[in-house]
Image (cartoon, rainbow, N blue to C red; front, side, top):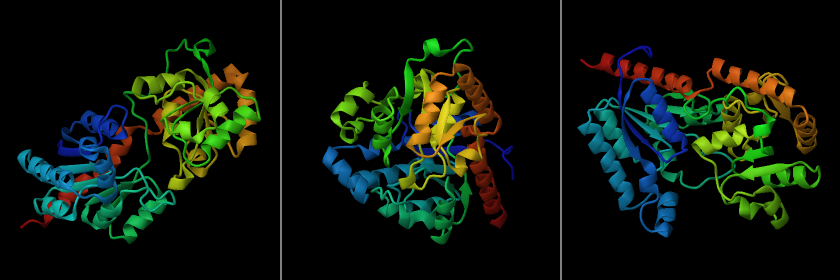
Length: 359
């Protein structure tokens, strides 16, 4: 069966805070014509005493975890859903997935993080055991696709992280450097060696670096660098995130090596926002953007600094590249809707197989 089949009733279990990727994917499924019954995972993950919430997250135990599983089963039955779609489902038990399968409901797992990477994130103990119990897994890394299959996943669909068209779009046509108040900008988290890399760009190479992101930057940057590079304590979400990209002459994007990522999610968002993208060089980026025409790449801090110096003083070149990058992101399907369609094709195939196996 194909993506043109009937609209689906989907119980959508994901973190749904403003600015979350789960919320963006929910919007995409709704645009594609499906009925969504939401469960906000964040309410269960943060429920109650903060210390107990940390223990729950690491060990996946307790009454809140039980209530979530009961709620999933209750709402799936009450709304007669076709699919239960989970986004980073750390608290879901095998018995819940088995009960859904017994009712002919397709289960989808979308996991953006890497349970098997060197970053060693906590919280995956229960999830890893349930990998064979989902009908479909969506994964963004080739290494993860192979690992999931090795661990008994029935079907793994490879997708790429994507931009959200309702949030990430180009600035007004008259936008120019008079509107850009941020020089060399990074909006994101301090994974890997980013704090040292950005400090070098500022301290050693004298570049006008500015950072926005979670307050954990306050622990990663030394006091002088913190005062100079992190002037606005806090993160940018949704409109503020897009406008942060618009207001930046250069937008940096790094791979998360500790997560074994093949490209940076941020790169597609920057390009879709019509921002000038200066990204870490890797095959995942060079296969998706033509170098020096649709994006610019660097390998190491010295090359990054050289590229920053050149493009900071060359607005016309930046504008030409950023406009081409924005066109490429749209034309090549780096958006959520295109990626969700790939997963939905697997959903329809699974539903058809189930129907064909019934007497």
